[in-house]
Image 1 (cartoon, helix red, strand yellow):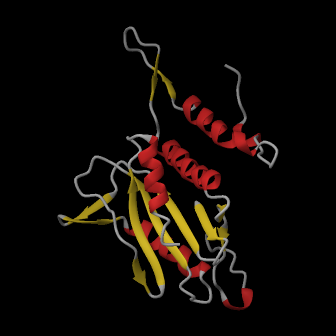
Image 2 (cartoon, helix red, strand yellow):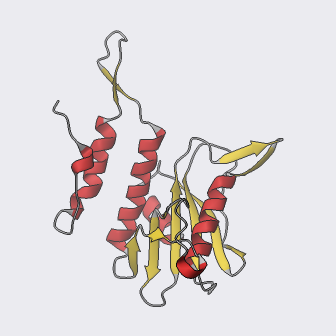
Image 3 (cartoon, rainbow, N blue to C red):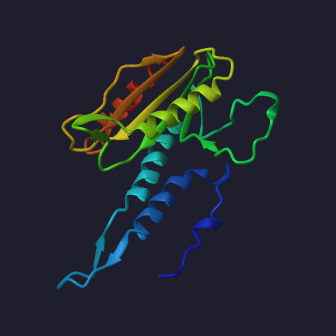
Length: 204
């Protein structure tokens, strides 16, 4: 098998339709591990970081393909809402996974996709959402909505697991902004996945 330098791949308007396919190829090729078990030559070990990347690209491409007439779909970088543009050099970058901007009313939805083996965290027998994820989407929304208009919302979209407790929150407000935590069941018919993805963006 020839070596593929994945970092050299570049996608523009004339070849953008191949981007998702190339991510799948990368995912499959880098998950092939040799095994010494009798009668077996190769096994697939799908690493969580690769699955996370593929999941993110799937959701992004779904909205880009099916809602391009309704939303501007991007993975836009979010800038810190710092007065006087002080240019503090060590603040981390805020890179959104998916950003949908409604063409009719400029309302914005920031979606952060999450692919974990466990969605909920447990502390002293009490289950809760991963705190870092909540802080992340809160920070994205509040910094993007610089004028505190309330027109920017955020969703954490987890790939569904076999846990007994799974999030499916209706939008709730923090300040003037709507937030929600949802799951997407990938182990079902595509029509059901499509209906779910359509449903979670209705409020914008």
